[in-house]
Length: 113
Image (cartoon, rainbow, N blue to C red; front, side, top):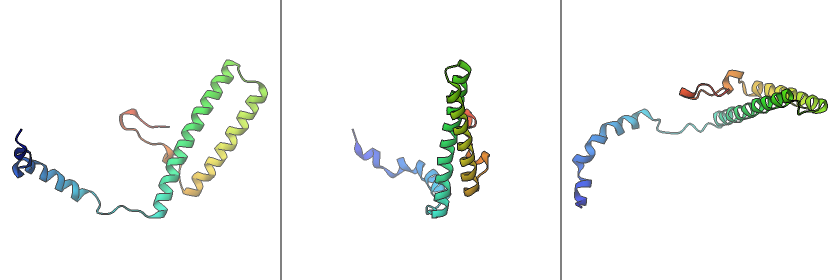
């Protein structure tokens, strides 16, 4: 195999324009503002917690419908989900998020929540 062929400038010229355009489109520096990083991390964590809360709530409702939970368990689950909902509202308010801010759009799959 002739390795010289792979390194000829004419072979790489076709990549020059897209790479230059990409370089111009991307920022020269990453915005590492601690406040933005904290807010972004908080949004990600709260989104995951909200997703898990909804999944657990749906599972609890299924188990209630199946009759596999005692009245005491149903009461405890209800109190737990209410407390979690209140705490989530407090955290959303603290970071300035609406409920919609925790819903990620997944392209063709639709919204996460």
